[in-house]
Image (cartoon, helix red, strand yellow):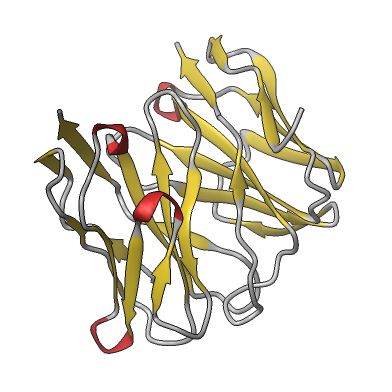
Length: 118
Length: 114
């Protein structure tokens, strides 16, 4: 496997279920990200991890719980979701978490998990 | 708050036509600028990026973009589109000096008819 992989690719869950999304990057990067892509809305950053430490929680409800056990893996644990949480969830990674002015530091995206909450 | 505006939500062109997609952002400091493309059924891929230096950047597949700081713009261009350019195009800006906090535009769906 190369690049950024995500499993499952599709997930349907009820509002009382607990499920997890998995992301794995094979690029040797130190930073990983979760994004949410809803219909007709811009891609929204949810969480940022740098060397397994969360550096940003972009006002995300607690029903979304990220976990980064090592620099290659990122999880998003889901519980008691709402139908409006149905979206495409994208994972990305970059060499480092450095921001504007830091230098060449692009993000590589996975294929996403299409989540439907019933 | 930072924002990114993509003015064209849907664009339909014939093959060989020229393309220009607009992107404007709201932040005035140091920025990194990106254009990503999402082909049907595929994941987001980087088309081109600007970090510093020459404001005219060239990307893959004949695309280029020009960073005009005074206009807060980073428009994407291609002189002659192909049917295979049919995709959704996203402009993204990072203006956070602390870490990579990409703010995306809403995207432009491009349909190129053969």
